[in-house]
Amino acid sequence: MDWKKRIEINPDIMLGKPVIAGTRIPVEQILAKLAANMDIKAILRDFPRLTQEDIQAALAYASAAVGSEEIILTGSPK
Image (tube, rainbow, N blue to C red):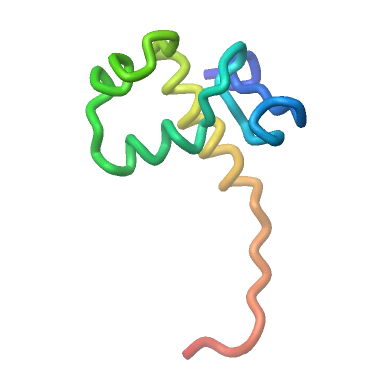
C-alpha cells in the first residue's frame, strides 16, 4: 500500500495533521475508531467519502510513522 498517494499533510488543513487526501478527515480519527474496535463498515458509514483503501492507507501511514520514530531513553529503568 502506497499511503503517500492517499495521505496529505498541509499546514492549511487541520493545522497540518495528516488527513485523507481531498478531505478534512484526520488519520488520527480513523486510528482512534479502529483502536476502539469500531467495525470498518461502521467507519465507512460515518464517513461516506472514505474508502477501504483510505483506511488501509491510514494504517500504513501509522506503521511507517512509528517505524521511523527514534526513541531516546533517559534515566535508568525502574
